Structure formats: structure tokens, C-alpha cells
Image (cartoon, rainbow, N blue to C red; front, side, top):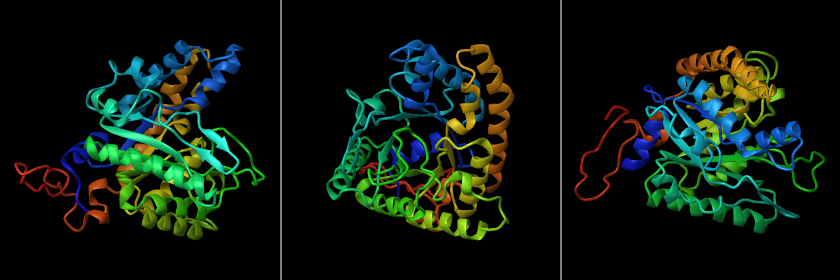
Length: 348
């Protein structure tokens, strides 16, 4: 595989100097808005509260991040002027409000936002979450694939990396039901792996997968414990299905759970993480005590990120060395007739 000049640069912007991803997600909307609304006792979460919390996350966590994922409505307006210019800026494009149908969930873009607008806003990459179940209604699967392909084509047109997130969700026939952005405790590993394999097709234009664990995080054992070999085999299958660089999401897992997940992911070839709630959810429980949130972020979240970053530096695979790029590493394809240099490796 080769990579275009713009996508190559965007991938570098998201990664640290060694080509590993230490990315913090601040784009969550329902998990933050719902708790604020409940604490405030209001019909809607006040904009200032949601944006204020996200501003605090950016201020306190950016020093440990190689990139930050912001949403256009809350985090970007309050955070763009304070985000360290050395960090990668990722903007999310999917609407947090999905449409539930008898056959499955349907995703859509945020109103009045597009890949082009994200590029004009200074985004180094575009992130999209697509709810997907390969066993959902055929028409729903086709619609979700069309949605994803449309975004991928736009990312190719505007030469910006496409960061693609997949989450398994409950269908109407499942015993476990939730509309929250949380991991299914009863999910099947094959559903996760088959979903990734489907979107690894070239027509979707995915540059970096943001993936959930194939095994519920609470069920992931410590390395070398009973059952660890079977879990590791599933992570290796996830890597083969992706066929390109990938990172782990936390899906609301606890700190210890997510740390265990990363051990398996890195052993399988993941290039880092793009996580949010595993890092800052404990601090968020103190809302609306702003000083308490800040103290918790400084005393708990930052040391936790440093621990994850040490693990990432030691065990994650630099994105540009992924086998999909071949023995020479990531190579930039000519952008036009005047761009004739071929860059091999991370440093060019």
C-alpha cells in the first residue's frame, strides 16, 4: 500500500515522534450530556457545562496526548485556541443521535458539517463512528456501508486521514438492550471481527481503525493467566481483519480493564490508543465540582495516561511499519506530475 501526501502528513500529526498514537477523545456527547442533565435537573445539558468540562479536559490532558479528538459543537469552539499546536487535531463527523429501526441503527453526519469543513477548520483527520452489525437487516447494512463509503470518498478527495470507529450494538432480538455509548457485555467476538473485515475493503478508504476489544473488557484476563492464549488469538485475528494501522478505544472500560486490553492489542500489532472515558470518567463523577474535577484529572488521569504511554512506547507498533505498507514502510504516492519524490519510512 502507498499513502497520499496529505494523509501521510495527517497520520504523522496524530502520532508522536516514534509513530505511535497517544490520543485522547473529548468528542463524547451523550455520555457527558446525560450525566450533566441529570445532575442539573434540566431538560437539556447546559452548553456552558458541557463545553466547560471539555475545555478542562483539553487543558489538563493535552500534555500527555499526541492528538485530541474534538466534536464541532462543544470541544472545538472552546478548545481550538488552547490546543497545543504541536498536537494533531481530529474532528468527529457523525451525529451522536442515531436512528433506531427494527432492522438496526442508522448513522448520519452532523448537520452543516462535512469532511471539507473539517479540513477548512484545521482538522488533521476526520473521525466517524458507524454502528454496525453484520447480522443486522440487509438494508441497514447497505445503508451503513454507503454512509461510510461516502465519508471515505470525501476524505480521499480532500486528502485527509479517515479514522473509522466501529461499535457492536444490540439488535431488537438481543437480551441486552442499551442506547448508551457503552460496550455490550454479551457481544460476540466474531461480530466484532467480521465487522472490521467488511470495512477493510479498499472502497471505504479507511486509514486508521479505532476498534473495540473483541472480548468484553471485564472478561479480559491478565496476561499469562488462564484463557489469555484464546483472548490473544482473537486480537491477532482482529489485526489480520483490519489489514492497516489500528488503535484501541476504551468504550467506557475501567482503568485496569483498559490497561489489560492494551497489553493484548499491542501484542497483536496495534499502534496506540484513542480513548476517553477510561482516562477521565472517574474525574467526571465529581461534576459540578470543577475544582474537584481538576484535582482528580491531575492526580489520577494524568498519571494513568503516563502509565499507558510508557506501555505504548514499549509495546505498540509504529503505524508506518504496518505490514500493509510492505518492507520499506509507509511510502507517499505522487500527488501529481510535479510531486515525484518517494518517501520511505517515517522520517522521509
